[in-house]
Every structure is written in structure tokens, then in C-alpha cells.
Image (cartoon, rainbow over all chains, first blue to last red; front, top):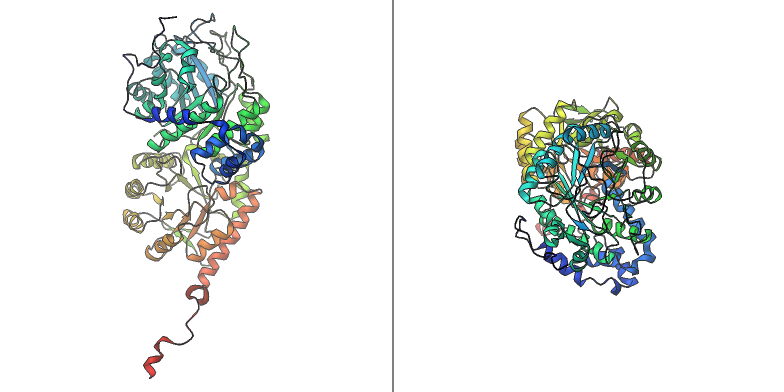
Length: 384
Length: 256
């Protein structure tokens, strides 16, 4: 146990940027006390046309739960104002599940005995062809976090192939340095999402026992390095249920807020994952983050940053997903397979990261959106 | 009214309502266009590029003029490239320039907009720049070859109405190009107000897209815009324009 590295100290290959955002986010989060807000604070927040940081805090507080219906109505109005009835569709493609990290809640963690695999260029292309046939034009490439098994060049090649079949290429891979992001951007990716998991560094340390991911501050600066590397948009998320979810959601919003102020052109996105059971551990659950709390968090993100894209994961069930896109989410995945090599109909090569709850294919999700009066959008982006 | 044409870059239109196409279901576009009597419809090229599923181009009636916009462009170079792409995919020569590098309010970057206008006007595009209403910028856009000027009334999607009214009036007074109020118009009465002021046309999207009955709201806008135009052409009453006059004449002393 003593061999664990200092989670607050950058490793030699990790770029250190000159930015105070991480420190500001942590200090604002530490000051945040969800219990101090009253009914009155929530009413005040609801009355403000533009929500302040304090309002955001109030909307995330337990005092806001009784106002959930009103909050949802306001969130819906904001969503419609900024996005109309458009909902973007995409699917994630896992190209490798090798991982060097030891994150105790994740199915890909390096000590979990699962089938590991990595797709080669030909296999990636085959998977992408199969996905493109469904009509999707946006893809999210994912890997486990192993820079050895899926190096920057490998991910870059995958992006190049993706650009042949898709209009929008996003990445959810290990955090990189800004020059690596620049390279990946040149290869065709434009959006980077990295989940901070939890913004509580003490808790973080107990969950991420080994690997690059253990270094908390390096992960916290990922979005900024991605923007410095020329990426167009960045995604933020806390894995709700790991720690105090209200504090984590607050930090996630504040993080995005400060990044947007510093980089006003950046497109901001939120994901709202809750913990899910994994292979060899079906006991994992998101504890006190029940559906009302999840809805509260998503609506608070919407009201605080009305222009941000919000993605709803297949971790949630069909009923929740079909309803949240009517209120606050603007992006939904479909035809999801979180294992390796499952799209093109052949035998799956590697195991899944977590259990999904909504296994509907692209057409089923598309039809459900239409039935709800929403307009599925396959591409809202143009590479120039 | 019959001979009252909107002329943009040498093209004539009877309708003074430019309809947006984003933010609502594709299968409602046709009805909205028809009820609005719109002859120009905008579309984001980023939504329109090829694709078999939910391609907006498949839903736009053939008899309307496409006004592709460069949304997504963060600088002049990107706007120019999107405009060229729009022409390549058959969207015609009209281009609405939107250069935005602010993801929160979506306010246009006037400086980059001027640069893009200059380049695209030289390439023969009918350039319609979306801009923040600034007289000096409007003059530069005119000199750069813009076919019309599209000042914002309020931030996109805000439905706040013509918050920039006084500045748009200045553009109407000073710039001899069609001034088309774009963005921020939330209700037909506001569209009517813009037309009464002397705007050449009005563009609306969110106001219609978020209405309960989209085709019906499109028609309401059509009527409001026509009413406002007719009021403008009729000349508003002196009471509204000048206010009440003093009871004893100021020049009375000349008689003494």
C-alpha cells in the first residue's frame, strides 16, 4: 500500500499549464455547503433570468427537491429556447479496453479479469461502416486508459478512419498533453470529454489506486489542455455516486463555467453518469443518487448553462432517457455496445465497461424521439 | 403594396419574412413556409451537408430561395470555407454570414464578419451578414459589398424583442441597403414594430419553432409583418412621431 504514488504530484511526462482554474474550482467547491440553502434561496434562484453561481448551488441543494416540477419546467423552456426540439444522436465505439489504471468501480480496471482486446485499423473500419449504415453521423471513440496499448498515434489513426464515415468525431480516452491534442485534432477529432469522476481529491485518491489516472490535478486540467490543442468542444462530468454528488455536480458546473469564461468560443458539454454495476462486481450502485436527484442535477446544469449540450447515457433506462430529452438533455446515444467489436456482427473480442440499461438500436431511439415530437439530428457540425 | 418588392442583391421578393428552419421538426417545414408565405428560408449548412437520415435539404420546398448560414464559423476563414461549401452542394449564391466565437450568447463577431463579407462579395455571393448593430460596422459591410445588413434585435433565441431598437433605427436611416432585423424577435407584435420602423424584412426562427402550433404562428408573423410594412409605407401619424405641441407658441415674441 505504501508504494502508491502521490496523487497530487504530476508525473514527468505530464504537461503543467499555467492556469488557476483548477484551484478556483476546488476552493469554490470546498466552500459549497448544500445544506445551507433554504426554500427562499431556491425561489430566488428560480426568479433570476440568468442563474448566478449561488443560484446554481441552491438549485442543487436538498432544499430544491420539492421544487423539482418547477425546475424541470424552467429547464424545458431554456432547452427549447436554445435548441428548439433538436436532439443530437451518436454512438460510442470502444476500440480498446486495455487499461493501466486501477479504479475500483470500473470494469476496465487493470486488476479486473476480463477479456481484453484492441481493434486493428481494419476492424475499426468495419465497425464504423456498420455504424454508419444505421444513419448516424456522429461517433464517440473510446479506449481504456492505456497509453501503451492504445497510444496517441493509434487513436489518431482511428480518428482519420472515423472522418471517412462521420461528420463529428469525439473522444473519450485518457487525458493527453496539449501537443498530443493538437495532433489528434489534426487527425479529425474535435470534441474531448474526460470525466473527472469526483472533484474531491481525498476521495479520488481512495478510488484510483494506480496508473496515470491517479494524478488528480493532471486530469482536472484536461479540458483546458484540449482547448489549447485546438479542440472545439470539451465535455465535463462527475460520476455521480462516487462521493457527495451535490458537491461533485456543483464542481462540474463551476469547472465548465470558468472554462467557458476563459475560452468563450469553447463548446461546453455535460455528461451525467451514475455508477453502474460492472463485471465481477454487481454490488456497485449510485447510492443516494436516485432518479429525482439525477433529474435535479441535469436541470441545474441546464439552468446554469442554458447553451450547453447535455448527454444522457445508456446507463439510464429507456423511461428516464425518453423523458429527460423532453426536459433538458440534448444528446442521446443509440445502438450502444460498450464492449469491443460488437457492432459489425462478428464475435465480440473484449468485455464491457459497465452494464447498460437501454439497449435500443438507432432506429428505435430515432422513432421514440419522433413520437415525442422531437427532431433527431444526425449532424450539427461541419469541418472547415 | 403590390409593387412593394424586397430587393436583395438584384433578386426580387414579395415576402418580407425570412424563416428559420432549425429548432423544429423537419416535417413541419413545408407547412411553416406555406403559412408564412416565406420566399427565403435559412438553413445551417452544418445541418444540411449530405446524409440519408434527417437531411434538412430533403424537407425544404423547391420554390423557396435557400439562405444557407455559416453557423459554426468562429472566424472569417471558416465562414468563407463554409460559404464555398454551401455553393458546392447546390445551395446557391446567397449566404448569411454568422461568425460567432461566443458559445454563451452567440453574439456575432463584427470584425471577422467584415473580413468574410469582403472576400465572399468579391466571389459573387449575395452576402447577408448577421451583425451587432453598429453604424461604423454597417458602413464597412456596405463598402465590403454586403447585399443587406442583418442587425440583431436581441441575442439569438432570447425572444426579447428589439432591444437594440435605437441603433437599428440609425442603420435604417443611414445605410442604403435593406436592413433585416434578425434574432431576438419573440412575437408577431415585435416583428410588426420592426417593420413599422422601416426594416426591410424580419427574420425569425425560435419564436416560431417554440410556438404551440408552428404553422399557425408562421401565419401570425406573416400578417404582422405585412401590417407593419403597410403602416411604414402609410407614414405613421404625427402624434406618435412628434408628441404633443406646446400650448403657447415659442415664436410668438416675433409678433410683438
